[in-house]
Amino acid sequence: MKKLFVAFLCVIMVMVFLPTMAFAAEGDVMAEDAFREALKDGETVDLGGATVTLEAMLSLTDGGSYAVKNGTIAMSESFTSNDSNNKTIAVQGDDTTLSLENVTVVSAAGNRGAIFVGTGAHLDATNLVVDNSSSDKGAIIINSGASATFSGTLDLKLGGESWYGINVDG
Image (cartoon, rainbow, N blue to C red; front, top):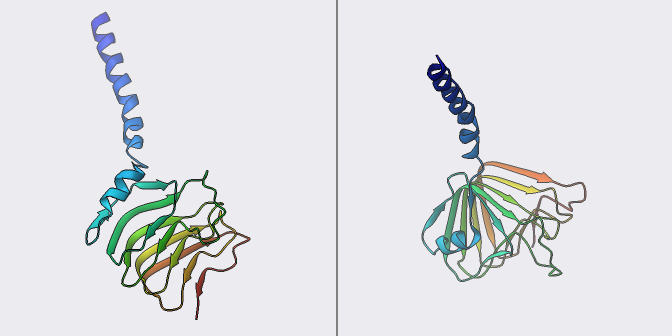
């Protein structure tokens, strides 16, 4: 009888831990250095639902074509900067293109917004969520001479002190 009771108790203990293991799979994280390494000209980074937390602005400036899908790009909450142009993502320079599909971009209080598209650059966003609720600046800036295409849904989460959602210069 004791052996049967011990076996039953072992089965119950294993069953109790199953939900914990299932929940642990949620909220996957991709290391920042691995993300930056994977983000190469002409290739798509599929985050597979993972979150990348940046310690510094993601700056794409070399005329390349970059694509990210299915995940979150977030600035670290500990991020601080005195740079007036600091965003979570900056796409700048002639013929530099960033495509975002099913991506959430999150700014931090130290950011001056979430996404900047500079002169000559292009942003192509499909089903984009921008969480700018921690920043007191605008969410998306599109400079004169730059372009952006939004399709699907665009969800802007702005803080009480945000200046604007999307600013199109010129």
